[in-house]
Length: 481
Image: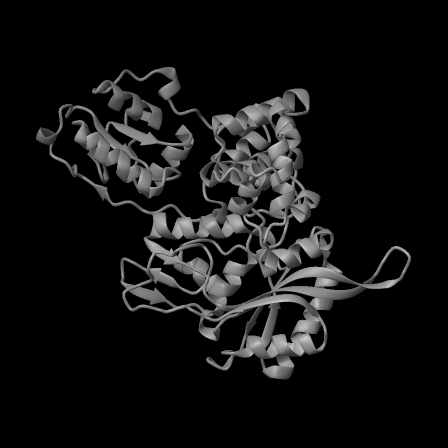
């Protein structure tokens, strides 16, 4: 757990009585679980509407406003700050939003009061302290709520296939919370206090708990568009926009695509040719075999290099949809240009069915990184389709197509690259969100920039990056958000 930030305890208010319409009501917003951005927004909105909202906790505070905390949580926080007085009112953020809507402090109703910590209930007690950010939670591979997370993940995927990434992200965050729970959810009461579960997600969960299935999920599975988009985006080199255009033109399967006469780029032609193989899971054994081939080729071209298997396999998964490798050399600069040499060697050995190489385009500015055009990093890399020797059901030799990505990082950026390429995708996204919103920093697979200090923060190991972000270190095996 990240220790609570110690707030300055002041004997006076930070806002004069004359500046508010209701000086007898002094509110303090607890940042714990609310987050700094939301706290700042509500503070500014309250003051704009004439409410007195103090920045620091003091003896004059009458209302402590919090979100997703119990009364015991707030009292423990007060004690941890060395304050032995509890204000008259500990209220949920709903009281503040109702008051802002009414234009004056409203009466405190039962729903505004903070609930107390349950004395029993198993998972219910545990879920009350679940952090909002996935990068604050340990999520192992074992999933006690697979039926629920599969449902939300399918709705997330469908939203993304409809180019609604915001809605998709909401479902994925909800699924990540369920995946982190130590016990199976059997009752909706167990989810009280859990973050990231909106009304839509809760309705889906309730349907499954009560009937064993969600009508929305089942109808999505059977929908013509979802099935077609799954097939078309499953082609290597085909994104959502391209697949959507094909679907609008009446193309719903591979046969129709082949008969359509569409002009495909090189990646799409390779993806269509090897569609069946690329749709199969890659086993850890196959990943290890490819690792030996890649490491031998890299060391032959650049002795002393380090080749690390990243992605889901580094997190402990036994299968995945592709195999990712991170390459570096302890001597900064020696790694430059190694990819073309490695690719040439692998081509001579007849391992590559397809490849596309890009050069390192990362530029470190002394004024800090510019807003990224996308979530992609700028390392030298090669996207490939490997031809891995294997056997068919009858034992006959053949080559099986496998997606393999080779990424080269300068040694000074290796810790950031290792963190970024280990995943999971949501864990990394939440890390960047935490850095931006809670620490005013910018995190990428290249660097960490402190906007407050105006400087880059160096790190030789992943543990140092977590420390810079004031987060407990989470091992790769617990990053399966």
